[in-house]
Image (cartoon, rainbow, N blue to C red; front, top):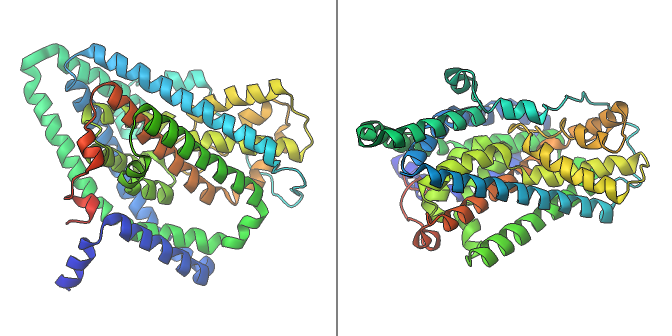
Length: 425
């Protein structure tokens, strides 16, 4: 038994997760709907990960801001982060629009059998911005309001800087808190192969591979658009052109985060892993990782931006709307804002795309039919676009770290060989 456990832990974590995914597809295909009986194991894994989100965001942001030593550096870092996230989102939705126009996934599609879905009203941007400032920080922590937690943690970090040397004991305590939370994260991630197996088996067993034939055109456009975003925008423009770094080493360094993102369909659930790979495998120092990544996990939704554009134009094509250049520009601008307002939970974008479809005159009944059609297939599509979201978070954090001189290129090229990310217990 001991030898078997030792052999298990000697296998790199990412290899165990990939193996679990492959086994999940096989088991789900044979078991069918019965695979729902093991879904609880996947839910348990997601619950364990989400358990860590609030403490890891709070501790890392406060500790990261306090370690800056100069509040003006936070302003520089924040402006660059927001502008980069906004720029990549606009590019992503532009790619989605272009592909939908070229591939025309809605032409000839039959939605007559689609059951109209319930269209949830999107949260207004003004209301979402107002919620960033918590009326009660303790309530924000209890509710898991990530943006409000980040805001409060930044203020607390600036307060520690302003107090000076007398605040050192608190700063050191926070640093210990970060180390403890990351250690617990390592333990929780050892459950990942089992949780991923259950989640993939459930998706494969309940939907099956043939189910994607009905939504193949949309899925193909999303896949192509996402690959363009990752290869051209992140790989060629950010990593190769702006940073002169190897995109291959980048992907190898973040593979655990991508696998967890794919299986959980949640950027915030992936956040603990993203923070770890950013620091240990990419060389992004904590001062940047702890501030950029929590913001990215909440507002940067490039995969969602591609998806919202494709599905919105898909709906326009199904119902015969003749869109103009002005309509496409409105879709791009509105889609970028909607992607920022997307809840970071599985399928969070489905009901918010109604805002985009309303801009060119689709009725609530037509929107409900499109949502109902796509709803049955949204979870596997959500898995893919969450992977893109997390990839974008990590690419932007690497760029900001380089610009802020908080980047260790030695770690990027040669990540540590010890620790849970390499399968060591």
